[in-house]
Amino acid sequence: MVRDSLKEKLDSGGSAVGVIAFDPYSIEVAAYMGFDWVFIDLMFTSLDLGATETLLRCCEAAGVTPVVRVQSNPWLGYDHRIAVDVTRLISIGAQYIVVSNSCKKEIEECREAARNWHKKYWVHTDSSDWAAKASDWGVQIIPQPECKQGLGELHETLAIPGINMTFIGTTDPSMALGKTSVPNFYSEALWTFIDSAVAATRQNNTIFIANTSWFKTMDDMVERVQHMHKHGVRMPLLQTAYYLMQIGAGKYLKDIKAALR
Image (cartoon, rainbow, N blue to C red):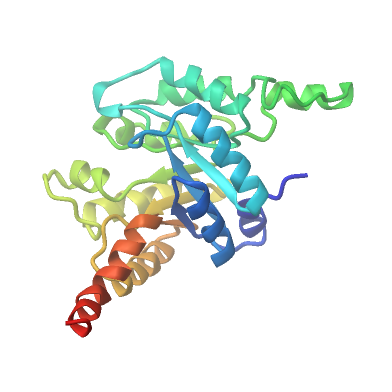
């Protein structure tokens, strides 16, 4: 049985901290440091399905849960192909799949794709497991609305049977909801929107994910995580492992170079 560190933390009533990682080494370090999950992004990286499958196996070996974002572009409108790509992600073993959706229909189709029995279809299961595997086999489809229509339909989307988690980004949605071209993590419009979604789904125990957006210092990052926690976010995402290195190194590198003069 593969360990699901994310589910363990959430089932215990705790919050689960994640980081974006694109390579085996970052994943191993993330697991070693105690992150509960890693975010593997196919939307804004060069990762293909072959590389993603390798990263999924790395997560399994390291004992940290992978959450994969499928490729999409919600600002271009409805895309039937997303559900097809979700089917392929399921077949290579992805269990938590984030969909940056333009509308409710895409999530409905992805939920239908999650009922496909082909998850790790090369692993033979006996007949007693077949009914479960043909239903959804534990796959979580996680909507991440970022455009106007997706955000407007969020409450309806969260009412789709089987949707138990959602990801509210704090960069693009802060601009869409705040009607500005400049992202603002602390936008009143953004957090009023998140509060309303959390309140509407409290009875269903929906798990909310949010990212820190682009912070300037580690202290700023901690403050943002505290802000998310106060508003009911149980899965804070701390940007990329590389960005954490950039912020950390940036604080000391000038001093190091000065010491070597």
